[in-house]
Image (tube, rainbow, N blue to C red; front, side, top):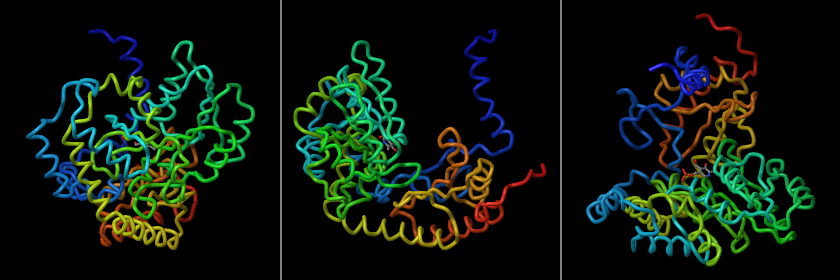
Length: 411
Ligand SMILES: Cc1ncc(COP(=O)(O)O)c(C=O)c1O
């Protein structure tokens, strides 16, 4: 078959990736040969510091056992969307999650990405200005662009400077539409900094504007019981919509929407990403439900352990002279500020059995390239010290610590 324009386009677009692969510096899609933080890639042991399994519960025997039992009863799929494939297990878990997070109602989506898409698209219309933090996650951006593309409904879209309440207030004052919906995150996933949620709640209350918080990375990691940024900042009852996920602390995959009875019911009956995509498999529901049991029984101790480990790592990295950007959580970007430095660091660490994924343009701006480190409760002291020693050695070798320019490399 002759080359069509799609083959030509794909070839052209893949140039950067081809080049990285040729230089053996392509860092993504590594193939794990087992689950867990300690796995192997091509037979080689690897400690994973790019996992979002923040409380280390994904591979807990009780969680796997619950999923196996659910396979026997419900198999791996329900072969339809929630409209005609809802189980008592879905509904029970929704009720438990609503109670645990402290909201009137919960709706489970098949992914967090879909939860955000569906929520934005169900709420935004021609009378709405969607107001977004400039560092918003892809699910917030895509939900916004999706809503904007709906004929006769397209909302106005405005961005405010990352975490700036002044900038948000300016947008709320100058918006063109009658209603505004503000969208922020509890913890920003590439920088590891907390959203200034308290300030934003106060502004939104003053402007009578609902606030949506995506707490994918705060769930299980922040607040005395791990309920997230709302609990940590004492904002119970003041964040109208919370969105989270099962793909991090909750050990599987799935989206969580929390809000008032009617708002959640409206999203349930109109969000296309909910109505037209298969329902969450019950083994996944069972796994998340078991993790919720554990959080209810033992949440405070587990969250404390994660926070102690993160504090240890942060202290050591800062002491060694690393720049961690704006991070103030368990997510720590080791700033390299140079694409080659980030890729070389990644490759060197990987060769030594440690996986830390580099984030380069277009994931972040040029000059903000980094190695993203996630500390989880599942990492041992030895894991963290291994990472630390490697970061120090290669941080020196590749001038990440000194900030000197990396000269041309001999082939
Ligand atoms: C901030 C944020 N929101 C939403 C998501 C999407 O969640 P999920 O993996 O459940 O689709 C992620 C995860 O990638 C995330 O980091």
